[in-house]
Length: 84
Image (cartoon, rainbow, N blue to C red; front, side):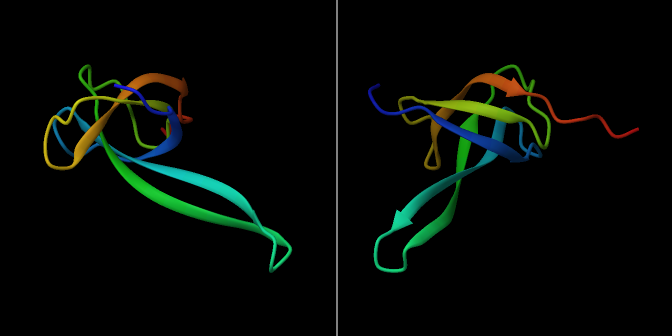
């Protein structure tokens, strides 16, 4: 599949082999003359179930696996600190 890879933070790992990832983008609004943040949640496939809540992950586009899952976790960029 073609498309741009996304980077986001894992919000939920409650499903089997699926994670919810929040991707944040910043853009400059020329009318307001400042940067604006927009967030969007994506459901992604995590085959190995290696992700944990708070991890920074990279998403790659894939063929649709279900109605909502059109992305897969390609790699974990930074693991969340473990809370003991």
